[in-house]
Image (cartoon, rainbow, N blue to C red):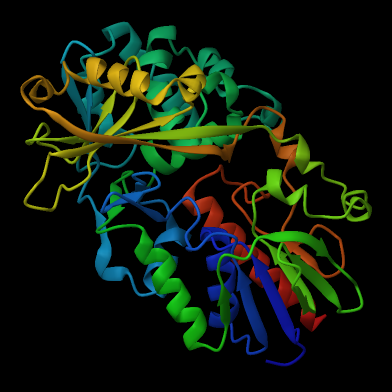
Length: 444
C-alpha cells in the first residue's frame, strides 16, 4: 500500500484496540505495528481472570443480531465456530415472587413479531401493554426529532403514551443492561438505538453469546496480529502520549521505555486518556471528553453444591435487578455456577462483599428456589469501575471523533463518536473507523 504511515502504535488491548489493529492489517497495512496493553492480558472488559482455579469472564456479555461489526470481527479473528445466536429472540424474565414470563419473536416482521409475547407478558397491565404501541410504531415509522440528543429517553417514551409501570417493569429492563443507565439518564438517540437494534431489528433482535471463555477474543486477535508481523506488548502501562505532526510521536511507558512511531492510536477509556495526554494537547481538542460521566458494573459469581438453575439466562426484574446466567450451561455441571450481572449498581457498588452476596442470595431464592436446597460453596464479586460512559442527554457533545484534529493522534473506544452507545458493537466500530481514518489520511 502506497503512502501508508511507516509505524503505528495502538494503545489499549480491549475490543477497540484489537479491532483497530486487525482492521489495519486486513486493509493491507504492512508498516511497523505495535499494540501496547497495560494488563497481562488482552480483551479489556471482554476478558477472563483466574480465581481459585476458575476462569471468570469480566461480564457475561451477550450480543444481538444487529451487532454487525462485532460479529464480523469475531469471524475475522477465527471465532466463527464459537458464535452462538438464537434462531429467534427468546428472553425469560422472573420477579421476586417467582413469577416468570417471556418475550419471544414470531415469524412476522418487526415490530409485530413481538405482539403475542408482549400481550401475554405477565408483569404489566393491559393498559401498560397498549402504551407500548406508541413508541414502537413511532420508532418504526417516524424516528425522533433532530434536537432529541438533549432529551431523556424516558421523556420521549412518556410523550408517546408510555405508562410509568411499563417504564419501570419493561423499558428499564431493556435499557439498563444494554446502556448501563436507566431510561431517565439515557438520551433519545441512544435509547432509540437499542430499540431499533433489539426490538425492531430486521433480524428480530436475536440474542447470542460466545461459546467458551472470553479470553479467546484476546488470544485469537493477538495471534492474528503477530502472524502478520505486528507486536503485542503486555503489562506495559502508558504514562504519557506525546503526539507530533512531524511523524515522531512518542509513547512513554511507566517503566521509562519510549516507543516512537509516526502515528499513535489511543484506544483507552476517556477517563484514563485525560491523564496521559499533555495539557498542551488537551487544549487543542475542541471536544471536552473529560466531561463524560461513567458508571460501573458488578458481576456476582455464586458456586453451589448442586444445580440451582435450568436455563441459560433470565432477566431478574426487582431488587438487585440484572441478568442471571448459568455460566456452565454447556457443561455437565450446568447450574452449579451462576452469575448475576448488575448494571447501574448504584449504592450496591459500595456494599461489603459478604453483605452484597447475602442480599443477592436472598432476592434470588424465589426466582431460583433451588438455592434454598443447595449449599453455597464459594463466591466472587468482580467490580468493573467506570466500565461504560453514561449516554446522558447532551453527552454526544463530549464524544470526540476518531480523528480529533491533533496531528499524529487518533482515538478509538466505545466512548468516542460512533453513533452507538457503550457496547461491544460500539467498541469495534470505533476501532474500524479509527483504522480507516489513518489509512485514508495517509493517502491525501
